[in-house]
Amino acid sequence: MKYLIVGLGNIGPEYAHTRHNIGFDIADQLVKELGGSFTNMRLAYYAEVSWKGRKLHVIKPTTFMNLSGKAVNYWMQELHIPIENVLVLVDDLAIPLGKLRLKLQGSSAGHNGLKSIEASCGGQGYPRLRFGVSDNFPKGRQVDYVLARFDKDEQLELPALIDKSVALIQSFVTIGPAQTMTAFNK
Image (cartoon, rainbow, N blue to C red):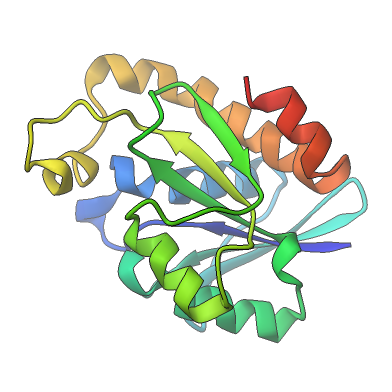
């Protein structure tokens, strides 16, 4: 069994460790824990790691968030991975910080990275790990909020939340989405 794990984010130091780049941070931790490293390849930073007999192809698109679908579609085709074995790691404003949600399909909820994936990969039927970043911003300041780094008190919680996200990914690829949702979607 092989899987495509997609961390969403924007490349460049100005975006590093921002709320919008939590997908990159989770992908980095997953690959680090499994002893891999990323290489800059076509449309993405790419790593290949294994977990309990499963091959995980992990990408961080270099296309910027709004064109993430281009990289996802390319790697799905290149590696012959079906859409149900793609797991997208994405920030979500509608979920409080500290909460994770695994969904097997759904709308983009206005997220430009997910919109791009829907357009390039044929719809909403792909799994995603939604990482809550909360919506604690003044009206009209959403872009500034997601492109900002986490607050100091939020940063204290991040390592445990990223570790929990890695555990969710490992569960997804070994015991499957249904049992993973039961275990993690609380």
